[in-house]
Image 1: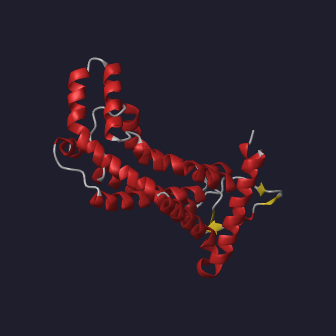
Image 2: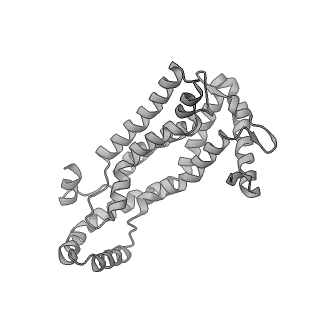
Image 3: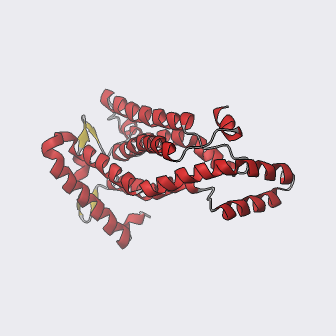
Length: 252
């Protein structure tokens, strides 16, 4: 069952489609055939600007977790053989310090509905009872509603399709690697391993996702990944992480 057949989601899908069409029309005199792609980029930037407060919270949380690192290590040494007690003591420490161990995930979770909407907009041939005009929009000859997988299956993949997808994936991987290498969160021995793994592999997982979603959604992922690196690099200057044992682990 398509969830976008439900009235509330169908209305949201129609509203998003109409909004993108209006923005595309406004940009057509400037961007020509790339107007719809530019509209997706501008929507991405608008979403990321709206999420700046969450980014600030993430930077503060990283700084505060770094300050708690010595106490977290002490807990690990004391209760390492008692995982349940270690978890309770760790969460109590976070609560007492007013720090969330999951603050870094909030910007990602907040963006998920937007990516889902863009995916749905460029996936449905009809929206609100009329043909989806956005599916006719292209970027350098590649339809915004296509993905590398669908192009391969349909036999419509050409050199430009491969080149454009390769550029998008390279941008995502490059920005993700810069973020991982230079802005890695402070080492925290008590952070749940699932969070550590997710943070490490997310940039590369995002690149894989870009191969399967419509080009419009892949553009969103590329722009938001670059924004993430730039925003965190700037915020790290305002909320620096002290050097010390935690920093040594980060550079290892």
